[in-house]
Amino acid sequence: MENECDVLVAIMNNQRDFSIARDNNWYRVPVKSSEKWLSNICPPKWIAFYQTKAFGKKEHSINFYAKITSIKKVFGKDILIERKDTSKRNKLYYQIFFEPLIELKNPIFSRRWRRIVFIPTTMAKLQSAYEINDLYHGSPLEDKLWVELKREKIRADRQEYVEVNNESYFLDFAIYCKLGKLDVETDGDKWHHNSKVAKKDNVRNNSLISVGWDVLRFSSYQITQEMITYCIPNIVSKINLLGGVNESKDFVRRIDLELPNSSFQYGLFDV
Image 1 (cartoon, rainbow, N blue to C red):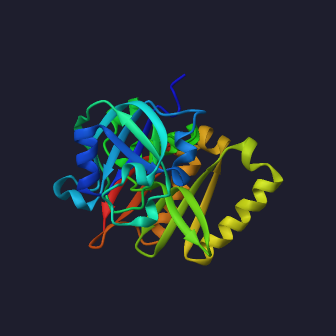
Image 2: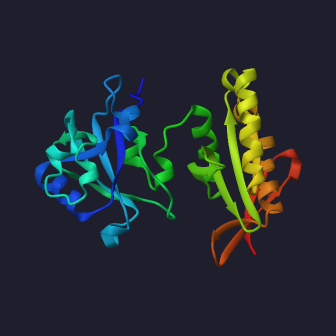
């Protein structure tokens, strides 16, 4: 079975840190925000870097990765000696050491600006991904739905971070439309049929709806057995009710599903 956490994508947001990574082969991330990904339970074997707007032509994309050699905890004062920000001196960091950076043959880009913190993924996905959404290593249900959304050219963002009333949510799939926003969730039966989880889902749905999101939830059976006859048509109907997918501020695309001879055929038209 493929290692579930052999690659960790981290944020590279300034030229200074990139120079350290390139020349000294190490990078640092705060322990508080990265404990989940860098604990001894399942440490990654590789690290990749998502470069922000500070990098000009390489902005909003992943261009470099490296093999991790060791990880240790250190205080900021031990690695940030020249920093003027004294608040970081007593802060705990993971110092990640790695072999020389390797440049990807094909950069992995983000189609739009979005908040990205860490993305755990696999080496297979890192080497084959075209865009950031291809990297997310969710449940098999999420991956199955993602394949179909891409097949139908329905633009969606995976694991979209949303804050509502001081609560943080990661949406399985966020689809931005001309007249609203659509959250599409894949519900594993064993998890979401639990009464406590169902209650949480209800609160979550209500919170999202209160700030303008529409929510569609699909069960394991629906995704594995009724993807073409139920899931995709319902997503498409909701998208069209919301005015079409908002691909950019000047381009909105509706989706047309025809049903000849009891089998769906897919076509796209612009408005």
